[in-house]
Amino acid sequence: MERITLNVNGQSHQLNIKVNETLLDVLREQLGLFGTKKGCDSGACGACTVIIDGEPALSCMILAVRCQGREILTIEGLAPEGELHPLQESAIEHGAVQCGFCTPGWLMSAKALLDENPAPSRREVQAAIAGNLCRCTGYKQIEDAILAVAKK
Amino acid sequence: MRLPEFSYVAPRSLAEACTTLEEMDGKAAVIAGGTDLLQPLKEKLKRPHYLVDLRSIPGLDEISYDPKEGLTLGAMVSLRHLAASRVVKQTYPVLAQAALEVATAQIQAMGTVGGNLCQDSLCLYYNRSAASKKGLELCLKAGGDVCHTVKGSGKCWATFCSDLAPVFLVLGARIKIVDKDGERVSPLAELYSGHGRRPLTLKPGQVLTQIMVPPVTGSDGAVYLKLRLRQSIDYPALGVAAGIRVKEETQKIAVALTGVEKKPLLFEKELARDQTIGEDVIRVLAEQAYAQAHPLNNLRDFTPKYRKEMVPIYVRSALQQALHWGGQ
Image 1: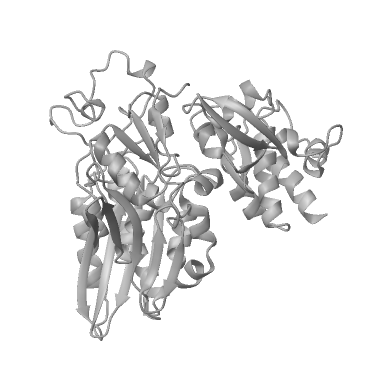
Image 2: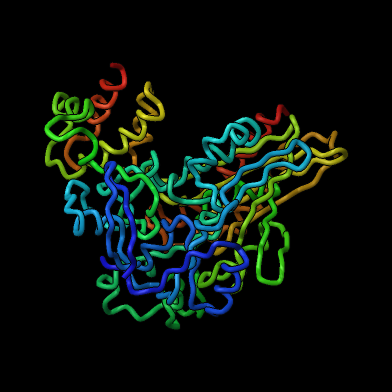
């Protein structure tokens, strides 16, 4: 067991973890943050995407022990309790959510993109979410939802 | 999938990392970005007793540029930072472009330049879940003694698929390898063993720390073309880099291939500076590449025949584009 401090959504947590635990497992099992999904668990689907130090990252492909001292943002930290982030509002408006399993992942990818590039082109949006597989929407609605926020 | 048990070491200096790695004598694995390592660990394809993390060592994630010396990249520079670097975009645009061809945005943010060059080779018979291997004899790469790709060959044919390796090769990059006795600089090509089972020449205790790319002149040009099924995530079914490097009296034309052999393949030709690079040169390089590329049925997409037929087409196109960029 290793004692580490994780900064998640602006809160600092003292945790006992095993060095072979992924950030995804620690988020879900120790912190109860179930918004970050376990899809393929092998780095291919993007459902587990979180933002680490401002950059999109796959929480299934990073050891929790390597995240000490870094700022982690999960879907739960996207908007204050009881409110929705503009990206989430836009997702509802554009029908970009169907089964919902990929949604937290692409929202985090989109958030990382817009933080860095507030007015992306459709191509840039596509590149940013290319690592987030969606089996329902066909991506068009997701792109539209992100672009609508970008324009505002 | 749970990761197997291992001890985790975060050395504070390169010397400490090298000593630790050597003491572990092959039982330790280096972790940089982790994107190429964690999946084989989860599948129990690799079982290191120790993971030695390079992230805690200061100075390995720096990019520096000097018009006389060229570009120096720390092995821990992420692909995302490589692609976003102003000097890389201005002076070595092909590197920025190739970094963005790797996998996905998330993996570009996590994966490193050193990790991309040191990535393990791939094979459909090896990189699969334990359950789907049921009934298959253990292959050479997994520690057994058969190869399912080239049956009866007695050697491992796993394919090397780094996107960056061919690009660095045509740019004439050199690498710095550090161990507890010191450091040495060698051409990038020497990093690759040509063996499917262990594609790198690094020995326990040796760490790749820097990639040095020579300076470019206004007449230099380089491109990277990647054959793949999807616009994201895929490894190259074929990757071709071409580059022209003009020196005082000579010019070097280089073509490098990935995804078609156990190591990246490099073909070079040197001409006098004032000589025109014509169809004859392009044809010779395309023919050499075609002869030596051995795409096999061990990657997911396209048939080996199609990939092989694409080799000369991609080589020609890459060379023509590199010449165009170089203004020839």
